[in-house]
Length: 61
Image: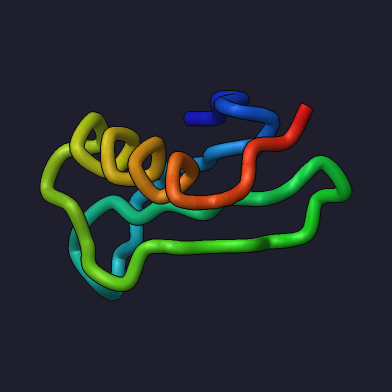
């Protein structure tokens, strides 16, 4: 799932190795600025964690 949030692109995806969902956060240039360290059982939980991580980053306009 992809979502734009505070100027960042959030992407959640299943990780077979971790047996859970993870997230990646990219800036407008497409450069990865953050990612999850732990897997999430539900994709919605990964998205909530991605939003919280994006809130901790400087806002992009």
